[in-house]
Amino acid sequence: MQQATPQSPDKTLLWVAYGALALAFVNGFSAIVTVVIGYVKRNEVPPWIATHYTFLIRTFWVSLVVGLLGLLLTIVLVGFLVLPALAVWVIVRLVRGAIWLSEDKPVPQPLSLGFG
Image (cartoon, rainbow, N blue to C red; front, top):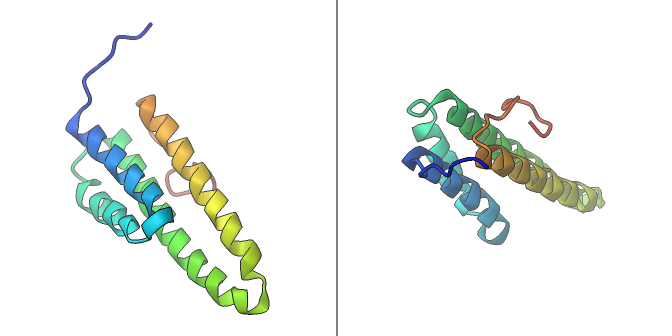
């Protein structure tokens, strides 16, 4: 069994960023907290944590653009397929990122549009 280590402030703030992006499903605006934390902290943290911030920033921007396109496409009903697919994509990325974070691992491919 591995010895428990104290939570570093960098890792705690990263958990806050993941939580804020998850909370965006309820209020939408907390995603802005995630992207601001990511841009501010990304160059100040260890490289493995920086991969998580890059992953979250990419998730935010892609979900914003695809979400807006999905809203526009609801006019022709296609958006009703795009928006649920986007929600699943974001949830899977959040869960995968949280698992890597809990294991103190970097995101393997933080710039990918897939699941890392």
